[in-house]
Image (cartoon, rainbow, N blue to C red; front, side, top):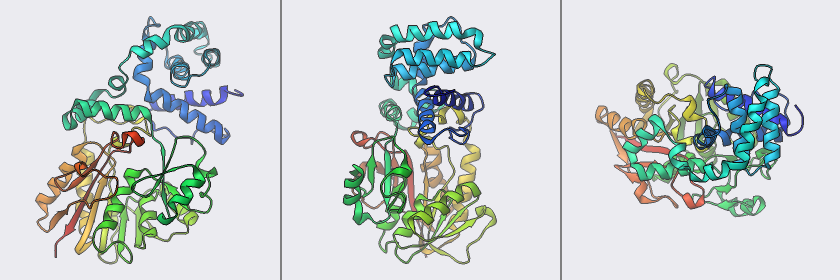
Length: 427
């Protein structure tokens, strides 16, 4: 494949990875494609996944029966290009036909692909406009769980945020440089002190990347450390253990604030990214590759931060494949692991110190319910109400815990879903 067909072919493979094999989107399998074409492939596949309910509703009107997955995905790509990205119809139709023709098993269906793609070009826009996009973008178990937690109106707003995708947020090594870097990058300075740029572009080519002036981190993911830093005593000189630390955004925040940080993670591949981020930014942290159930620190810490493994449902706006690869029918294995991690991490906090528990989940089972259970079992633990931070609505805190959602800051481009609780170990 050459020219514009190469990223489309790569996007087709990515869709197969997600929808057939249940794998997360990644550029690891995109071979020797140049960086711009890898980015284009990921963007195309993401566009299909983000809008797939609506795309399939359009295609259903032009298909007598569901074709083989490769053909279906080629048509989904064509529809996304025409209806979401305003690609000229002749280019999108031609690409769909060539992708179907390229495979011996689907070559005989190139006529079908041509006919259906042409009908999408001619009639698809009207059908597209008539669809309820938020309702089609968030379905099944996740919609039911979120509706139970937040109500139908909030779920529609969350779904709208998912469809919009995510901007690019940056955390700064030196917050005092925010205005200067905002001017250099054409970015917005967020109330929390970070920067926000529109989506797109090669991150490593941006000003400030090579010199380590900033790192990519969604604003919601930066809040747990910001809250810890706002507790009386701050972070400078504090001994902090960052668990499940890779790829290192919170580790970098802690180090930049002057904490003495030990970053622990069991995933060697993700730790390689943490090491690279530390080297690029010139920040310092002790890095430990270990399972937290098989490791112990050499003494108690002033604070322990646990960003626990979870369903990651708060990150769907940047990972639109999640609803297709995560089974949310049974969260018990995850929540049991979170309970065990909470208990172990709390044991490393000195009396008077703080445990920060957070998850990038929208589900109360992985947030409020875990803390309620933990507090019931630990009489020497108490909640610290989240400190007031610029840009955070007091209404986002309830019961001494902070709940962030993708529909918050909607006019600015939203934020990931996150849950944060600060727990003091009483003396």
